[in-house]
Amino acid sequence: MAEWTIEAMRDSDWQVAREIYQQGIDTGEATFETAVPEWSVWDAAHRRDCRLVVRAGDTVGGWAALSATSRRPAYAGVAEVSIYVAEPYRGQGLGRSLLNALVLDSEAHGIWTLQAGIFASNDASIALHRRAGFRMVGLRERIAQRDGRWRDTVLMERRSEVVGL
Image (cartoon, rainbow, N blue to C red; front, side):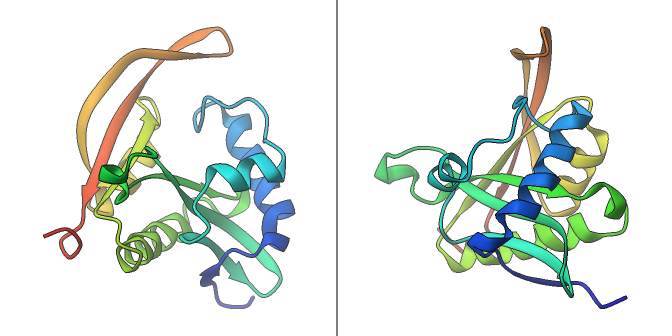
């Protein structure tokens, strides 16, 4: 099997990224979303830069992207992380590689704070973010419902050591 590489997501990667996103939705532990949005909606909600895929040949094993947390200029350097790994490749280090690459890419684009809202029960995602330098800043109890059930989220953030000093 070819070696995994991380590169910029192309618009043409959306079909497979969409499938990976749906796999995350299906777990019930990755997002409050219950359906993958259309490309135009997803594209408009995410920054054009800081979109990555991990690829081996023609196989995309996961993706990561950033979305703005606010339209206010004061928060231009704050972004929210989305990261998804295809089910067959979970637990193999792809998520760690993707998130570490996203951190570097975000800093190259002037982002000083990354944040992630993670279901409190998603131990694997919390551990992944901790390994990438995120810290828990709070617990948002019963913040929203998924499938009629109130869920808590952990708010995590990572402050850049090179941007915004």
